[in-house]
Length: 488
Image 1 (cartoon, helix red, strand yellow):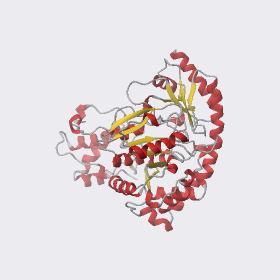
Image 2 (cartoon, helix red, strand yellow):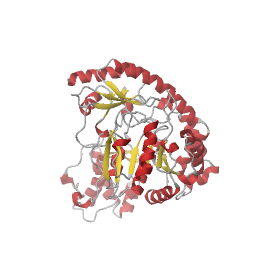
Image 3 (cartoon, one colour):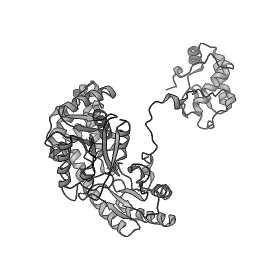
Image 4 (tube, helix red, strand yellow):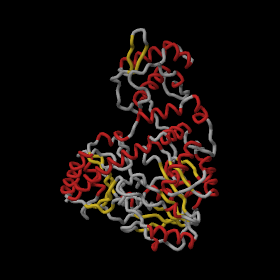
């Protein structure tokens, strides 16, 4: 199919002939990657009619582009982008103009990047030793069943779920599964009016923060902790209170007196993976009621409990409506799914629905219905069981490999989990270590983004076993040891 002639338009202010301008339009599009090798250009007749110029002008421009190997002519088939077309940018004298004259420092009123968030390695599957968290292992995901569920959601009977605008509502099948299967496993009972589907856990926390906080509020969070929470809080303008954790997670006694909202990960603390004991959970709930603050609970990786049963969710112990529960299918299914949910009292969820409506209306109906089918037909539970078995083996292998290395495990989930929080020798900067290891095919996650402020230990990092094959773990740990030795 040829490139649409609508992609071509003439600039009345262009300094040069029509023939020269057409040549530049095509050449610039090829150099910018907008026209790809093998794509067919509009015929000289159609392009001339579209631009309202002589056909000979277009033909001559095409001939010059052929001479410069930007395009080639295929007898009776037309003109195509050459597979050996130049890739260097055109010089300024050929008419390439920088149009962006905006003074962005003045125009941008609010900044959303502080340069400290983690950057995932995009081509991580090409690395032999990917000790990275939050990425799917394709060998553990049943693509056939997912594809069948997606096809079922595309069926004629499901036309409404695919095409309708839900407005403030969500797919009833997905809500029903969350209400009857997911939440009861965490000891939580909720009505449909108390559940809202979100675009992942991060979106759920952002919605909660926007509703509960303003510039006069104070929010506490774990340090080290999930870096996404800090970004969420920073954009509310609230006072931020990082709470130093210990070997049992967040200590309630360190909470400030003038607290409005606490963000915490009691099941598997991120990134240390420690589990908050029951006495601390009860103390948190007592303080929340006595001091009148809310708790946002991110139930991180509760599904990955293969050594022992997970502890009850903080929300399940709440008798006063103080806890807002955040869950995510993106962590357990695959991160690209971007589906999570938030559970809370109806007044909060009512406001959350209105905020989501103004922001994105609702997550795509087809994705919601496909997920509902995948779970309702038992594929989700089967996959989680498979993941637990594999992760248990990988964890044991990694535990043994680290035991004979220069690093030591500082935190790991007692019930299972998918990663370790580890410590390198004190003089090692793990951001430098991570960069050096990429050359050896090893991916690790530096601990720097998990700490608040600028004064923090730089010798911590996270090692996940969710994406790396079991047989590669010992060699990967050995390469980490060698890299540490070089830095020493």
